[in-house]
Image (tube, rainbow, N blue to C red; front, side, top):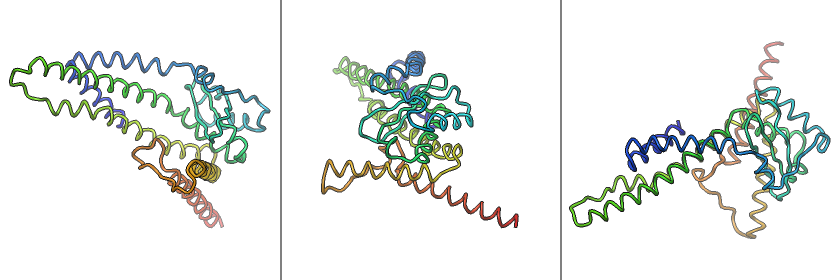
Length: 278
């Protein structure tokens, strides 16, 4: 639904700029950009980040955990594992189902337990198996085109007004407002898509591991690291949190709460099953 809203907004901007031709040309360019973004080799990003390959045995049990998790999904072959040293605890995925990679910072490799690291890897595998990177690429392509169309539409409208400066031309306030707000609206919609997929990836990771506590405690550590970093940068200052509308991830505290709720429901179900068997 969010992508449909972006597409409709994009089509309307194309129509303002050049009528039906604007929509058709925008769709053609959008398809080309989307194909280019989707096929961009992950190796280029990995080289730019100076990521190094994690070979089997570098981190005991890590490759086996990824292989086991991938067997439970349609993700084949399993993603390659890389590590970087940025000093920030992060993990992310690149590529698509045919050639994918998961990058983990050294801070996570040394700071998380095997159980917690498994939860983080399951979260990234959920993103890859669900096609979230393709979804984000589509959002990026449409957002880029909306921004281009918005700028072009502004120029065309202002140029037309200059040509008719000595006539009784009315200022197209509605069209100008839409063209001005369109890139902002697309940005917010892209963030909403990302937040939705992050929540669902948490739930899918729990289905893969059967262990919501592992991911929850990993997120707790990430939250403490993040807050500690800001306190070091601004000692004595209160850590400010942006409104959820401006974030591409749901609040970490809310994610942790949901994971503990899933764990409690699982425990309650287990107790109920034991009583019924008794």
